[in-house]
Length: 197
Image (cartoon, helix red, strand yellow):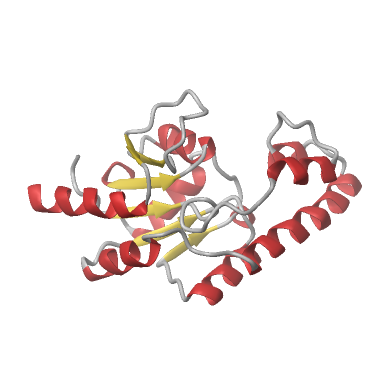
C-alpha cells in the first residue's frame, strides 16, 4: 500500500469504543431491526421524524458523554500529527455529539463532516467533501472505519479503505482494501508503509 496523503476517520466504534445500542435505538424509534436508522428517518413524515430525532439525539448525546477512546487512538493521532498527515472525521453522527467527544478527549481534526453537512455514508459525498476540504485527491486518501457504511462509502468514492475489525468476522460483503484488528496495528501498518515509501 502507498502511504496516504490524508486519512478520513469514522468516530463511533473506530476512534471511540462501541457504545451505541443500535437494536435498542431502533426499538425506541419503532424501526425495523434490519433497516438502517438514518435512512429510516428519511422516509418518515416531518412530524414523525421530529419525534424520532429527539429520541435519537438523546441516545447519541448519552453515548458521546460516556465515550472512551479505543486503545491506540491517541498514539495513532499523535503519530499522524507528527508526520504532518492531515486528518478528517467523517461521521453519520451530529455535530453536537462530535463536539462532546472532541472536548472530552482533547481531539482535533482539520476537517469534520457530520450528517448536518448533507448526504451521509454510505453515500460517497461526505468523503469527497472531506478530501476537497483537505486539498487531497480521494485516491491519495484512506478511509478508516468499523462498519459497512464506512467501507461502502469508501468503495463508492473510490477511496482505499481500512476496516477496523476488532477481531470479529466481517458481517458485510464489501471487501475493504485493508483489514486491521485495532488502531495499534493500523499505526504499525502506517509506519511500515512510510518506511517502504
